[in-house]
Length: 347
Ligand SMILES: [Zn+2]
Ligand SMILES: [Zn+2]
Image 1 (cartoon, helix red, strand yellow):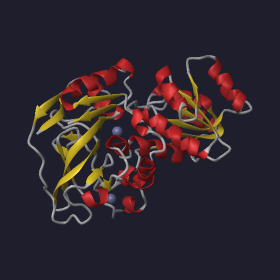
Image 2 (cartoon, helix red, strand yellow):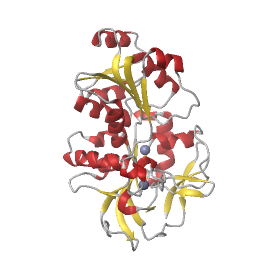
Image 3 (spheres, protein in one colour):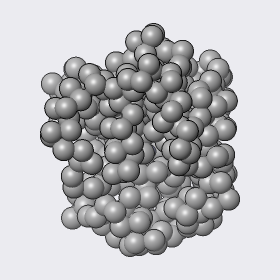
Image 4 (cartoon, helix red, strand yellow):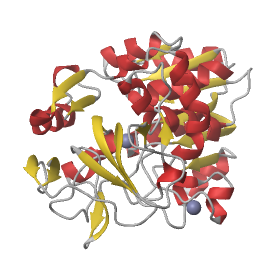
């Protein structure tokens, strides 16, 4: 089969590799209909994150059709249209029982093979899904492939970030970053609070966030901070949803949050230290919450939202490319060329 494989820094290519088969009785094999490139796929691609084996099939965002079913699988059969969260989960361990499926004791991240161990990804014609019964979710009949795919990661991650923020109806919320996760966090925040500000350096991204009812601000604009002060009696915002994952985004979050406020971080961070000191945290009575989204648990709430068609989630994809052009998709996305915010690959 054809698959997008990792070839080192700034190198991915479409290669012919062996198609996956059912290995464990709890596996299924899915024929991929659409796969997406995620911002976090760019971490190993750009060299910010190390350890990924050469030849690993990339990607953890995919939707497809079940084509092969292990003997112990009960909930799925051939022909089911399914979405996977970006990690597998068993449904029965201490963490799964508490909804923290991203920390499942048996969980694996799609598209991450290190020192020969791990799971190949979904940017391929076929993908093996272990622990299928507890991992996969049926795509609702009315939802498009591309919108349903988003529930497996970015939509759930944005909603999880908002959940970590503990937003109340009278809160003023700031979202850092209006990429796909930031826009989804904006959607979630706006469902809970009236006043949501979104910060992004790129005007096209600000426009997208504004379409979802947020006030979009350019962090480089000197009047942005004045607007926040005016909206909060000079205190700063109650909750920051940090959806970038960089030192700069953390520093901006810290400067925006009021004393006693919360920063919730959904961005994958690769830097070794916090952008603020323990003393800074003390001085603001700061609550900082972070971590990988338990996407499988969040999909219980986000998949029905996808089915409702309410938020036109397909608009989060700026580019749709045939599979053969995956390398160009990575390049465009990494360089933010041509307003690239998210790429959909069609095998
Ligand atoms: Zn992702
Ligand atoms: Zn588990």
